[in-house]
Length: 272
Image (cartoon, rainbow, N blue to C red):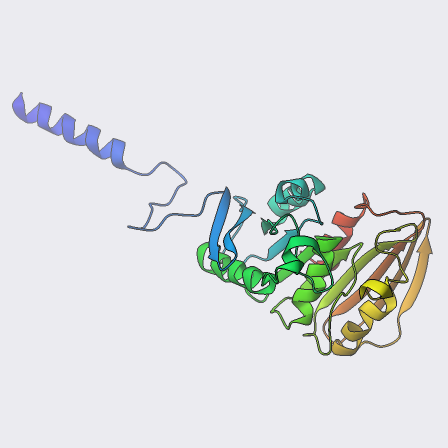
């Protein structure tokens, strides 16, 4: 009887400790990152936070999309734009970093981040490095998306030679020097009725026009002649470039806001 009880207890312990069907046992000391978490990095300006969404569909070597809010906005605000759903569908990690004082230092814009000289390029680069290590994302497939001041930050990051595969600035402009950006895919969205970041730029503030903003990227990407097509309120110009592409989407009547079509357009042009 004693032997029988011992065998029954051994079987019970074994069953309780075995991994469930369809799951792999965890390696000692290694755990997968949480699907939805906050990543905090120590920086000279103080602790910096980013919301990181890692869908269950993510595999090693997945792309990373960094989505940046506008001046006065928050990381959480940007989650309402639909990137999470697309990331879950296609196995992409998305990071929503928070700017200092709800702003980014894009050179001639904006607010506290610019006035105090925050090194946002350094912060964003450190965030990418952290996620490459923690989530196994592909450092060659990192994309930066932003609205308004966040869009300006995406340009600034690319102009600084950041290791980016593509940028998706919406309602933004180059607001600092950009002599020789790294070749990068660009999908720029702008509106004809945008009075905050107009198509002609704001020279008095050091903000380039849309044409001047795209010029250094067209040169860096060795682009040829663009082709333009109009569909309803959209006038889209595309350039085929050496392994990269540049797209300019101008929306008639669109003000300083995120267009309903922008998220899907960026995702499609990045081929995520």
